[in-house]
Image 1 (tube, helix red, strand yellow):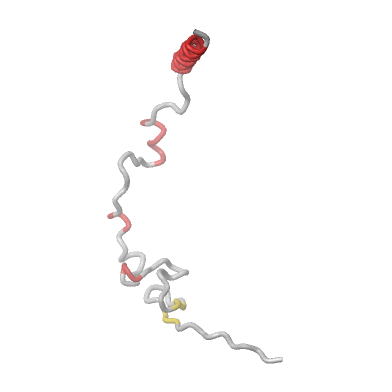
Image 2 (image 1 turned 30 degrees about the horizontal axis):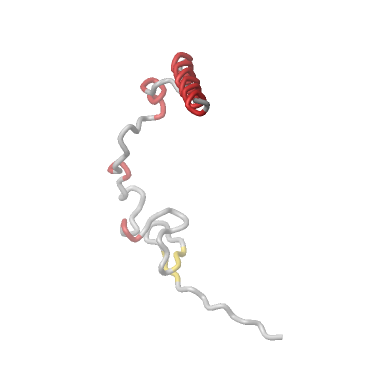
Amino acid sequence: MTTKKTPTREKFACQHCGADVFVGSAVCRECGSDASTGWQSAEEIDYQGLDLPDGWREPDTASEQLPPAHTPAWVRLVALLFVVAFLVVLVGLRFA
């Protein structure tokens, strides 16, 4: 019985943490540095410059500024009345 050797992939040391990174990898598995940041250290990568979507808030202030999560009872009642009126009109047209 012969054993088949699998080809070994080339590696290089991450410039930030020294972990082995396979050639062609997008990021270092250990520290997250990548080719687009030049394999920079965490201090060199400025995460404060991220463009956050509109409406993003800090977690501690989000509850103060967001509307209530539930729908008021009067809105549900008005919607129900519109649905009932629509069904009455449909049934009246069907049998007319």
